[in-house]
Length: 456
Ligand code: FAD
Ligand code: 2HG
Ligand code: ZN
Image (cartoon, rainbow, N blue to C red; front, top):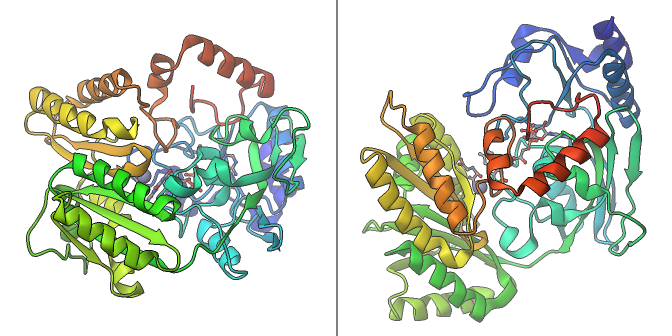
C-alpha cells in the first residue's frame, strides 16, 4: 500500500493525513482554488525525496510539489480527485554552506527566502531576490516559478541567481550539479530545465545561489506622478543619471493605494494632494542618496513628477515598502480581482495602459482596474475587479491578453502558468515551442506524475 510505504520512507515527523493540518495546503493563497489529497509528505533529505518519487512512480500516483504555497496560479494545489499526494519541501530548510569569497551559497529547497537573504547579509553579501511573500515562500518555489519581485531591474529574475541545482527526476533519479561556478560550458545547462517549470519536470531539492557585494546604503523615495508615462520617462531619466544603482522602481495606481489604506492598518499615502500614480523607488550606494535628490529635483523642475518624498530613515522606508508589499493582501481583502500578470516592453507601458483603459470602458464600464507592478521590468499586474455576479471575466481576460499579444508582450510576466492559466499557453506560444515543451515533458516524465494538470 503506497500510503504506508510513504509514511515509512519519511518517518513519523514527515507526513500528515490530518484534515485540519492539510486544510491550508489544499487551497491557494488567494482561496480561489481547492483540491484534495490523501497525504502530505515532507521528506527530510534528497534521498527521501527520491524514495518518495520512486514509490509514487511505481504506483502511478501523481505528486504535487509544494513550497510556501504563496503562488498566484494554484500550481501547488492538487486537483479535486483526492488521488494526488503533496510533497512539501518544508523540512529541507538547511543553509548548507556560505562561501563569501566565492559570492555563493548552497541551500536546501525548503529554505524560506527571507532566511536565505539573512544568511547572505550575515557575511556582508546580498542575495538579490526580494518579493512581498519572502517571509513564507521557499527558494525551491521561487526557482520553480522563476519568480521576479522588486529587484529584477538590477539583478534579474530568480533564474539569474542560480549557479547550480539539484533535482529529483520523475523516476527518482537524482540530478546533482551544485558546482558554484560562474563559468561552465560542459554540455547542456540542465538547471534551466527545472527553473520556471513549476514542478512538472523535476523536484528541486537544493541550489547553489549567486551572491552580490552589499550594494551600500539605500535611499528610498515615494514619487507622485501625473501619468503612467511619466513613470517610464522618469525611469529612463534616472537610469541615464544613476546607471545601475537603481534597485527597484515600482508603479502603483491611486486606487490601489486607496485599497491598501482601507484594508491594511497603519498605512497612509503621505502626500497632501493625491496623484493618479505613484512610484516607489530605491537606489543603493554611497553618495547616491544626494544624487537621487538632485535628479528628482531636476525632474520636478521639468514637470516630470508632481511631488516626491525621500524617506528620512529606514523606518520611513519600511513604511513605504509595507504599503507596496501589502497590495496583494489588500486586494484579497477587498475580494479577489481577476489577475493579469502581464508584461510588455517598458517603452509601451503607457500605450498599453491607455488602450487597456479604453478596452475596459467599452467591455465593462463598471469594472475597477487595479494596476501596479514592476514597471522597470515592463511587468504590470493589470488586475480587474468586476461587479458582483458578473460573468464578463473570461471576455475581459481574453481582450486584455489579445492586447498584450499585439504589443509584443506576455500574458504571464512572473507568476507562471500553474493551474489557472493553462488554456492560454498554447494560444500565445508558437506551436513549435509547445511541441518542444511537450516532447521534453514526455521524455522527462513519461508517466505524467509530476504536477499533472499544471502548465499544460
Ligand atoms: P508554491 O506556491 O508552493 O509553489 C509554486 C509552484 O512551484 C508550484 O507549481 C509548485 O508545485 C512548484 N514548486 C514549489 N516548490 C518546488 C520544488 N522544490 N520543486 C519543484 N517544484 C516546486 N511572485 C513574483 O514572481 N514576484 C512578486 O513580486 C511576488 N510577490 C508576491 C507577494 C505576495 C504577498 C504573494 C502572496 C505572492 C507573491 N508572488 C510573487 C507569488 C509567489 O510568492 C511566488 O510565485 C513564489 O516564488 C512562490 O514560492 P512558494 O514557495 O510559495 O511556491
Ligand atoms: C506583487 O508584485 C505580486 O505584489 C502579487 O506579484 C501581484 O497580487 C498580484 O497580482
Ligand atoms: Zn509582482
